[in-house]
Length: 174
Image 1 (cartoon, rainbow, N blue to C red):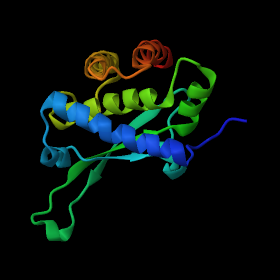
Image 2: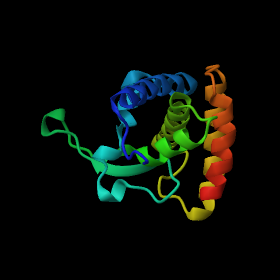
Image 3: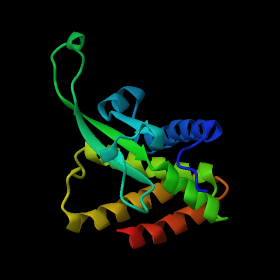
Image 4: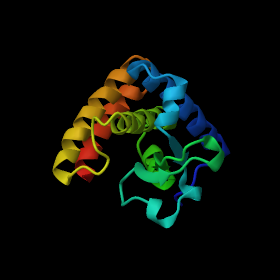
């Protein structure tokens, strides 16, 4: 029987992968901690997803952009973008359980670096979040190349197989 949600140990790997991925992307794009606040994001795993945060079949992570507002005590109120990385636990777990070449931690690293690059690109207005469908494949090509470049510096066991597999699967699922 396929599990639908990450267990405690897997959630710890998620947390570690987020932290390490943010460091890698920050180093690559020369982003300080205070600048990350401008690129506000959060991560949700399957158990906390609302119905509209569930992605269509075959998607491992889904990025949603919400409009946020600072607290009234934060000075002049100004809306900001809040990006939500919505992990699709069941799809990720299925891939890890059915593909011997996919290890959970490197897979999570790939997913987070990839989504954080999107967030940086949206935050710097390099790409619009609501881009036309015709532009999405081009954007994915750019982001995948950057993801590969960043992760190549890690020498993380199993990452090369994931980069190659994710790329093949990504095009099949679009």
